[in-house]
Length: 106
Image 1 (spheres, rainbow, N blue to C red):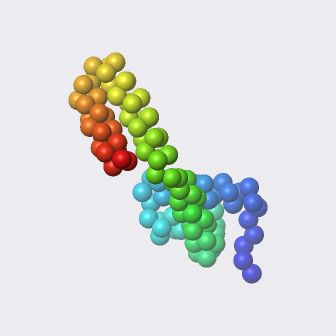
Image 2: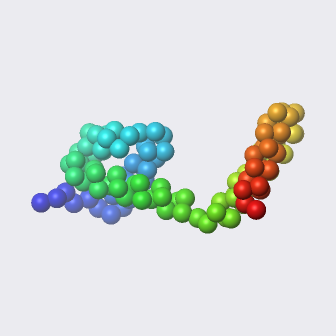
Image 3: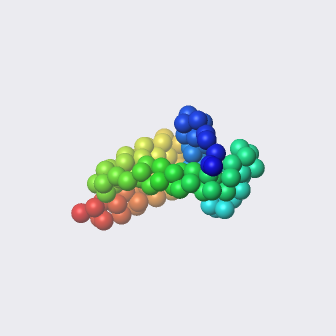
């Protein structure tokens, strides 16, 4: 019989595994760490790893125009801060990246 994990704890652990993935952990490393830290079986840790990967995919499942707009807004903010700080190379890099996004969007 499989291990039973309360839903709130399961969600917390899936979020932790998603964070590990974002920090560069391999799938095998995530499973191993879940088994060691939380005492999970390989099977349970593997299913939680799948849920963590799905969570990351869902976070990035947005339409291209929306993604482009988000990126352009972030580049604009970074460029303004770089200009204020006198870091003109970073500002120029932001302008270059923004023009690249605008070209591919059209």
